[in-house]
Image (cartoon, rainbow over all chains, first blue to last red; front, side, top):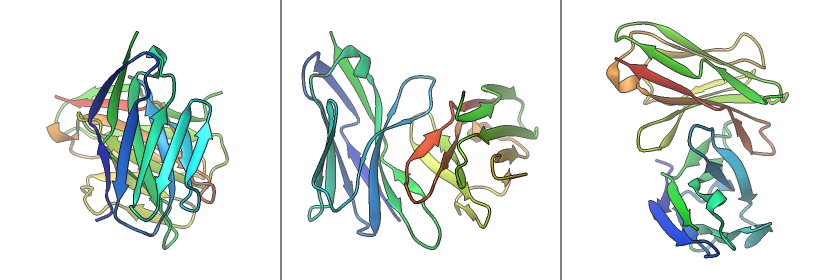
Length: 114
Length: 112
């Protein structure tokens, strides 16, 4: 079973803090690791993504750190804002036999307090 | 312009009924998907489909069936609805090589 384990389940930080969400995977054949952001009543939206040949990727206030040997990756949100309050999902893609399905972690509900 | 659109947004129906959810994407993507999000927010793949192949998650009951009239549409038909089918269903699409999914805004299905 291809799994992606995500933690914590929920996270509360003060405005300006740096929430960190962690994910771990088992299948070394995963070749693409995106993060999605979901607001209530909306579909998940692609936030940032990384491939396993890169150790870090930064886009604005969002950074992915990737540790291939440990099979772990994490999302850091710099200078967090109340508008960042949402559910965040990590995911991993297996590309094999013509399939490009994403397997999602169980999500982290982030609350940023003003 | 909405990239991936689903209809209806809300669907309330009785047990045993048959219902359909429609999905359309205007991104020119090759592959479309259906995901189920349960009350705990867990996203689970149900189907992926491109013009070559339908891949079905083996845990999905055969009461669920995808229908694709063309590359831009993937509809979900559900027969004999059960209480446990209540969830939010998301359609998504991707251009496979690049990997990113674009999701629709979801259909909240409530079976009473």
